[in-house]
Image (cartoon, rainbow, N blue to C red; front, side, top):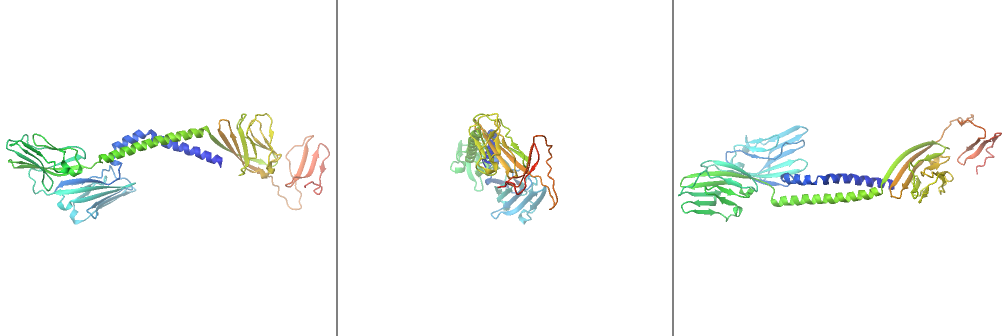
Length: 463
């Protein structure tokens, strides 16, 4: 139906416009929030290297502020992802599990608020891959590669250093200054890869650019402190500085917290900007569509009308017509209108309508100023739904629906008994009273300002 369709279109456009306008108005906030929280907008699996000295403790962080209802936190170890811990929270009840595997006995501690896993008094056998699974609305994964270093070669202690990916880290040599016969050497990893060397006696400085991981990333100052610029996860591990001649050495255990790569950041920024551009286009589109629809504004009203059979009913449009307006009246589900005026002319008199529907012939008039539909001597066959459409010169359209019920007074009587049909009217001089019977309105009684005359049923004209 055209009324419902136009109403639905306008309603849909208005709701969509509100939604996209809210998104559009908050586009700057979305971009800012996305840039500030880049580490949290990606559900893709991330990896982090965690070097640790044997006998120390290491904590693998979930980066959650708290575990929410319906969350599940799962920790797996090794290539087969042996379940070593699980926390499930549902309806404020927490289910908690920690493995009784002999190799981890008494060493695992799980923060029941955040789900972070701590391995205490760690050993070489605990080296390997730890997989974190966070099941919330979406499932996220994080991989931790834990490398446990043997303490056998430790001399002057091990210092733990943590750095964010992309930042620089300085490994400080404790010597205030180098002596004239000092030979300082920096090494990395289990293989003891030579990174840098200072021979004070020969004034020779060496930085290892052969290793691709450290190329153009190493710096040495006059005291022998080593700086690694633009650190990456591949730089995590054990570093050792030795000063030959003094017989001293120091070790640094460097961990690099994984971050999104610049390429990923660039991709996210581009995606956010594309979304912002798309929202702008969508809002412009809906503004234009709503403007178009409002130029053809549709209003719909509904009214219920109940009347006794035989009376006159006026279905009021509630609108003051103007010259040139178009008005149509429909009844029921018919596609053809009862009456139609394409170019209305205002008049004080009611207008008789020439209709093709036999049910309304000689019964319908229209109000000259308002377009009201006047149905005289209404019958039960006129019960149903009436629709009026008024379209002005501005193309604004008004629809009104009338649900008309025609009631009939029923008088029950037993066969053979008399029955009185009350008029509930006081008859005055000059009144004309007619009683008819049946669908064809057969005249059976007539009284007209004189003696009453009766018409026998056999004489009634019911043809």
